[in-house]
Length: 608
Ligand code: G6P
Image 1 (cartoon, rainbow, N blue to C red):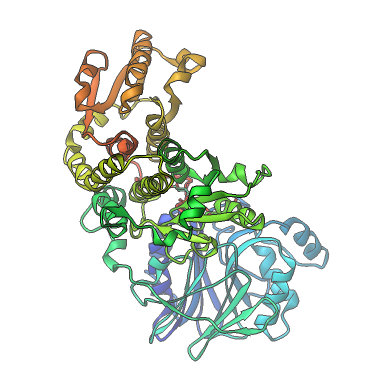
Image 2 (tube, protein in one colour):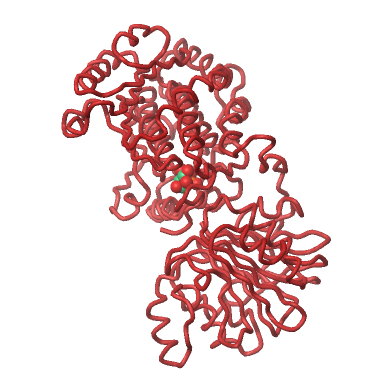
C-alpha cells in the first residue's frame, strides 16, 4: 500500500528509484511519480496507472538527470487515482517535494487553516498539506521544519522529502508506516521495504516511530521528533536476492505456491530436536504456559484465517479457551484482558495497521503479546514481547500462499508444545503428531504435482458468477481462505459458510449449476458435511469435494472429487488449502487477470 523509494549518490537517481518502485509494485498502487533534483530545479514526473507508463514517459528515468530524488507508488485513499493526486506533491514555489505513505487524519482542519493563510491546493490528497506546512515552518533548517510538522499532524506517515535549498539531501520521517534507510558505497536509499534496495545494499537502518533521517553523500544522520541527534545501528539483511524474483515462473503467486514445501520445512525443521518442539523464542516459562487461561488471536485477511484454524487446534490439543478476532474489530471493541492471558498477533508483513494497533492496545493493558510474523525487523516483530518467525522468505504476490502455510505450521507447533507441557495429550499422541508434522512438506509437494487436474477443473469455471465454499471445524477455516483466495484474484463472487449454517439462509441461493466447493477432511464431521452436500445437490448445486482417500464413498454424492493425502486431523488444512490455491490461480489466469497484482488490493495494508 503506497511504496516509497529514494536515492542520493553517485549514480543517476531516477532509474534506481524506478527499479525500487518496481520491486514495491506488489504492495498495490494506482499511480506513480518521481521527483529529482536536476542541477537547477526539482523535476517531477507523475502518471496514473501502472509504473510502466511512468517508466516509458521517462525512458526508464534516463530523461530525468540528477543524483538525488524520491519516488512513489500511490494507493488512493484521499482523492481518486489521477495524475494530479499522484505523489510527489510540491509546494507552490516548487521548492519542496514530498512523498507519503499513510493517512494524515487531521488534514481537513490543517487544510482549512492553510487555505485561510493563502495556500492553494492543487490535489485532493491529504499529503499536500505536508508540502504547504513544510513551507510554512521552513526557515533554512529542514529537520526543524519536519519536526514542527510532525508535532502538528495526526495519523500515520512514512515520508520522503526534498528541499531545493538542500539539493544533495533526502529527508525521511516515519510514524506507524514502514520506512527503511539503506547505505552502500555508491549511495543512500530510502524505501518502504527491503526488496526495493536489495540489488544495491544489504545494510539497512529500520526507522522507528517519530524519527527523522537526513541522508547526503557525506552523512547518514538520525534525529528524534525534538530534533535531537540519535545513534542507530544498521542491520544486515540476509535475504537471498533471487527469492524476490520470479525464477522462471509466470507469476510470483505460482512460484510462491511451489515454494511451500521448502517454506514449511524451513519453518518447522529448526524447531524440532530430540523428538520435541523447541520454541525457545516464545519467551514463556513452562509454568506460565501451564497457567494460561485464555488466548486471543488477532489478525487481518488470510492471517486471520490461520488464526481461525489456530483456535481449533489450540483448543482441541492444548485445551486453552481461544478466541480469534479481526484486528479492525478487536482494536475498537474494548476487549477484556485478563491475567494469565496471551495475545497472539499474526501477520506476514508485520506492518498491517490494524494488527499493529491491536498489539499496542494489548501492550498498553499489560497483556503478554506473541507475534507470528514473516518479515524480520518489521514493526509488529519489534514491538511484540516475543516473536515466532515464519521462515517463508519474501512474499511478493498480493495473494498470500506460502506465508499462510507457514503460519499454520507455527500454530501446530505452538498447540503441540502447549499441549505437551499442560499434559493435555499423551506422549504417544505427541509423537504421532510430530511424525505427521514432519511429513507435511513432502505431502504438499505431492499435491503440487497434481496441478494439471486442478487446472482442467478450473478452466470449466472461468465464466461462473458465484461460488460457495463450505466445511465444518477446520474445514470451515480452510473454506474461508479458499473463498478469499478465489475472490481476491479472480473477482468472482465467493462466500464461505460453516456447512451447518447453510440451512439458515444461504441455501436459498442454490440453483441449477451453482458451484459449491465442499471440504470434508475432518473424520468426525465427515457424515455431517456429506448430509450438507446432499442438501445442496438436491437444489441443483454442482459439488466439487475435497476429502481424503479413505472417504472414496464421496464419489457417490459429489460431482467431482479431489483427494488430499492422510495426515492427523488438526493438520488437514495445510493440505486442503493447496488445491484451493491452485484453483484460484488457474481461474485468475484463465480469465486473463493480473494474478500477482489484483485490482484495488495491497499486499501490505499500512493504513486503517
Ligand atoms: C492484505 C493482503 C493479505 C493479508 C492481509 C494481512 O489484505 O493482501 O494477503 O492476509 O493483508 O496482512 P499481514 O501482512 O498482516 O499478514
